[in-house]
Amino acid sequence: MSNQQTMVNLISRDNDSFAVLPKVARMSKVLACAMGDNDDDIANLDLSCPLLSTDTLEKVVEYCNHFQTVEEMNEIELPFKGEELDEIVSQKWYSDWANNLTRTQMFGLIEAANYLDIPELLNLMALAWACHIKGKSVEEMQKIFGITPPSSRVNGEGDTEMKEE
Image 1: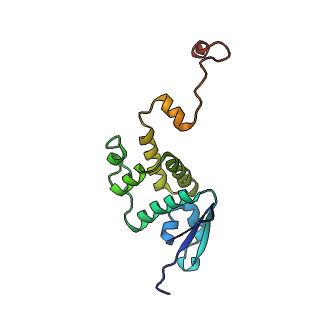
Image 2: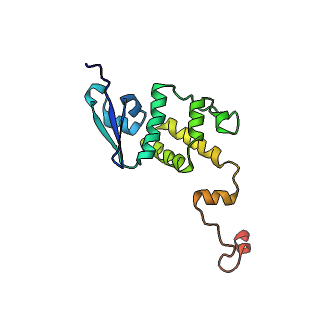
Image 3: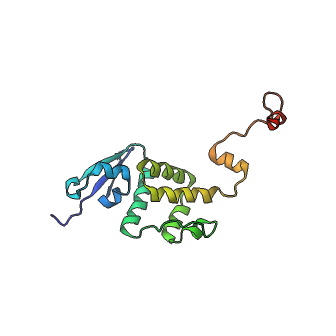
């Protein structure tokens, strides 16, 4: 066997490629199923991620690469030890990484972690999203989720009829 490490190429829907170690790709249960068991048989394997944009796949790779090659994320302990993400997730890299994401990136990563079946990333993103929207007013939530506020008049009768039901 050569000194070169075996790499797997993850391909975004934009056709951009990210070379990762097999153990990084295997964090995704979906990709792990496509890889087989022997790393020697997967030299230069291309795995398509057709639902993921380049930006989202880049963040998935960044998270999984850190998890596998630098420091595994500790399990999120219950009950929470605070209300802010950095109080709940004690590892600075993970809390900083999640706190620095935009809403669009967070939502994209929730979808990606669910689609690729990466439980550790899904748990972190769901927690980060919950911390992000905690304490928001109804109006702020409607804006965040793109919900049109209900009309003050329903069927010409106003809210009274709805409240009585």
